[in-house]
View 1 (cartoon, rainbow, N blue to C red):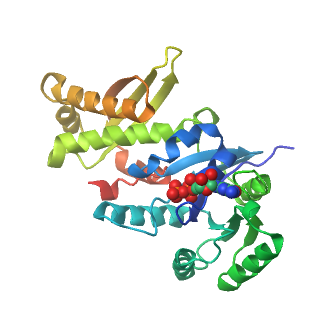
View 2: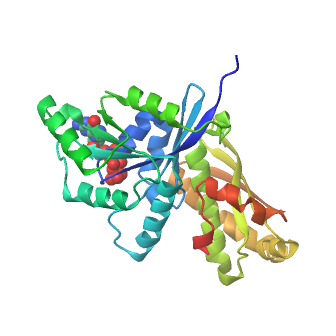
View 3: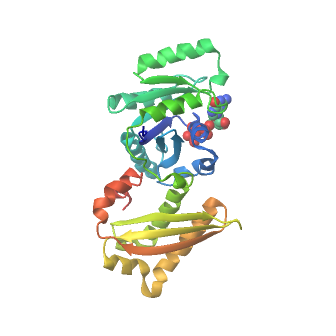
Length: 303
Ligand SMILES: Nc1nc2c(ncn2[C@@H]2O[C@H](COP(=O)(O)OP(=O)(O)OP(=O)(O)O)[C@@H](O)[C@H]2O)c(=O)[nH]1
């Protein structure tokens, strides 16, 4: 008998400090932990990919959903809900010892407006901090407020209940082919951030000259024994003329972009980086736009 593969997106939401990063690391593995605390400064939304049996679970980021402070954050709020809206499933993380705070209430209100769009599971985290009677009371109260598909009681830090949650998520993912090749999973958030940095440098350098139909993909990633990382990226444009703009006279423009991007990626990874950029014309780019938005990169609002 052949087994069926499953793949889908899960949005982990909750107040700051609820334990999202800790839970993510517990489900995905250590590599993401380097990224997660810095990832909010980027617009890349994929925080990690977990495999469980034949299921691939892609965790999407929801940066700063509930406390927009600056204008930039506003855009992130939209992006964040975008992430949640595209997700097959939402997991709301609530801290056991803090319970139904005004922040959690605000999230529940937002969820209620979207009720029915997708299943929402409740994960009460940090259960190591409370007594079981309190936990039962809180579970009941939260379930009165919102109709959760399922309630989990976990300690992300100690690992209690994490395997159950992960197994359940795996079973809830829609049937379909995996979204990412298995050998790229560990690096995926890094790959996306690196691509996003290069894209940002293109934007800064080219301003309004920047072709709207443009995308950056990290094609290969190699952590070398000498402690450096080799990254190959392709900048895809829709027309030949766009390629010329990006290269600049004698390749001056792309050189400048490459240097700026390399420095920032290197600072981000905290290791030396060798960055190789290539510009390719891909006329069918627009038709593929859908694919990129699936990957969590939203080109429309970044013009
Ligand atoms: N006692 C206890 N502490 C936990 C548990 N899970 C996470 N923490 C702690 O809670 C704090 C916040 O955890 P994070 O994973 O950074 O929370 P977050 O939701 O990603 O926070 P933001 O990045 O601010 O949104 C850290 O100090 C964790 O060690 C748990 O199950 N039990």
